[in-house]
Length: 333
Image: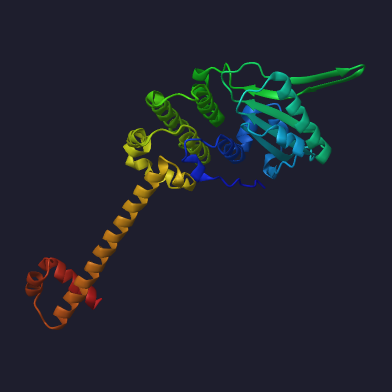
């Protein structure tokens, strides 16, 4: 069973985006797709029908203290293989570059503490999201007078990825990687770059609708991720809202109503409110029409009981004579 992460949505509205929370949320929602994309060698071995259990990482205080002040995400997931064996997947997401040797040591410390605690094989993968830094290590080598150790782990670097190929990909995490690359390369830029960020965000949202409008789980998770990781000023937010594919085509409205996750997002929250307000308005109008129709029927019935002619009733109401005749017949039946 997958345990949901409670996100602090208020934090996303602040200037500093909660990258950790966004990545955690996306990995948990689309964990099977995450493995397909980032760990294709492991994917065929896992029995996803048995689910995935997200565990709290209870590592030593030494490791925790050594990471203070840094941006990173760690997930430990217990999975069952098709063979029936229980294994662990350790996912580390490094948002900020760190020197090669130090990074390799950190990966090894996480590994041996997880291995010591659970005594099970651990698949480790590090997502290196700093798209401007090419030099993360992929292994730790230790040697001291005949005592030797080599610890290697899987890595996925955002650095050097072909963004055009990512745009062509049909995999949902390709769009997440695109958003991560843009965010990494544009950290610290001024308001003059907001128009460029707006255009890029608009492009990613359009791609998400184009590729995954038939997959609500993909679309919901990606729109949530993109909307928060690429925040823009209010005036551009308004411009983005008016350009949404779902706004341009009213037939698309029904698709978003099944994605409650988006209710509190900067862009799609407004769309939810407007659709719901319109639905409420329509319901009230139908209710009033139904009430008026019922009142008019009762009025006609009373007039008929007092032997008013059909012509007189038509003059006293908004009905035509033929409609009064139909009502007279319905009352008799």
